[in-house]
Image 1 (cartoon, rainbow, N blue to C red):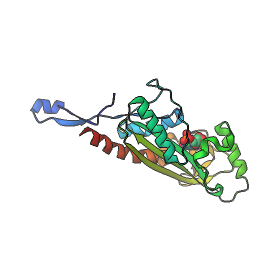
Image 2: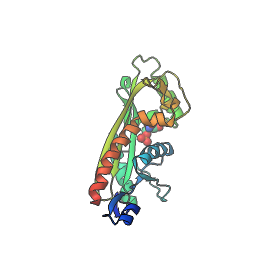
Image 3: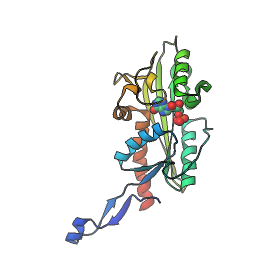
Length: 225
Ligand code: IMP
């Protein structure tokens, strides 16, 4: 059941004084269209304080594997969000992210999860460091596009970017994916050396989600009034 942003409910103070009822904000529920628990965790940590309740496919017993056939982050994010919204009847948000390395012509980009056909995050990092062993230009950026899809077909998107450098060896134990090889000069840490709060405040996913949250609030408001 979709929760609404505003409902007209008499507050206790209004009940005592007999004042006109004031709308009370209610937290909309969003389905996170991902089976990646690391992403779900980060998305939930960022969205909860912004006023959204989060549910996952597992919570609602939905099992859906979407092939990422798009050529861009936006196409893939929209594909996933749309499919989960249609299957669940819930407003759904999906993230598509990747690491873009300048010296590799911004690869692996949308192909980050399948880089070199390697099976695990660890193998993909090792392969990337091997390919970049003699590379002097280490500039890299994480890009995230988040799409929000409503069951009525409305869609919105937002994008975030985190600029940094590719290290020559791994550092740090936190995070996931390419985090241990991605150095963020402003904090002098790799993403894997950051606390979850630090990563969420500077990551591409954090920036994209905060931008999307603003747009989502407007969409929920428009749908409810
Ligand atoms: P996808 O968005 O699920 O297609 O993931 C793309 C790839 O980028 C995967 O290999 C992830 O491990 C990696 N990735 C996505 N987000 C992050 C992140 O925040 N840090 C490090 N790697 C990430």
